[in-house]
Amino acid sequence: MPAESGRSSGRGSIPRSRDGSVPFAAPVYRGAAPEEDPLRIATLHLRLATGTWTMGFSLAHPELQIEALNRSGIDPDISVSDYWISGGPPGVWAREIGSYSDVVKVDALAEVGSGSLYRITDRNPPVVYLYRRLGLPLQFPIRIRGGRIRWEVVARGADFERVLEYARELDPELRIVSVRREPLRSHLPPLTATQRKLLARAMEEGYFAVPRGITLTELARRLERSKSSISEAIAIIEKKLLESAFQTPVFPA
Image (tube, rainbow, N blue to C red; front, side, top):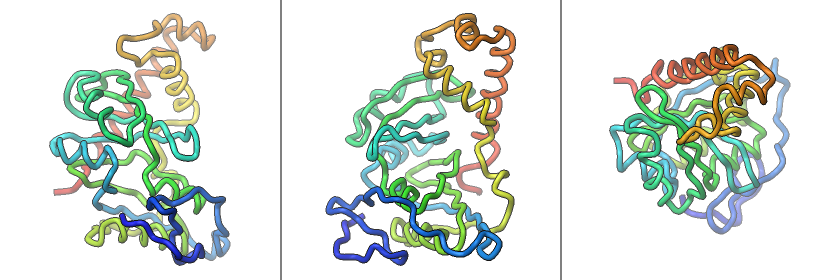
């Protein structure tokens, strides 16, 4: 997307730096009270931002499904995310993904179902800065295939319109599949807070590394829980992630 300069930083525009990125800023005023400004949920299909590894990789492999499961900031411009990618044994795509200029580091974690988990550290795409500025959480999982993304937008009033404005700038031919009003909880990631904490700890300790960096017995000892309870909990987490990956196609027929 071309860089924009001289634009107002008000609610009707998206301020950008000279390189086209959206600089980090504190959340802006959110407008009307929730009861006067109902939550809206939209499902969009649109083209990915150019210059991102997800765009290049998914175009090079249109048969693969990519699931972004989370995203955590390391500093204002770099984040780390876990991705599930269909096809191939663990690590088969690591070298190729690592060759993209916006990728800092790639770790192959484990084989799950018909694909594998990867932990990827990369430079933030512009949408991350926009969501930060509006104080909105990104909704996961995010599904990607063939250079296009299935994106769930969850926001109120003016913020909702700002996100749609950005999406139309990114892809004037975007498809708005649906706009609805539903409880937010139905669109949150499938894992509970406890399950997300366990998954993060297991990854941190190297349980999903290839080769595995810690045994189940040692992981349970460090967590001060029984081996059987940890084994069962991790199995449930894997099942939920797989169900999330396959319950909704990236693009309906």
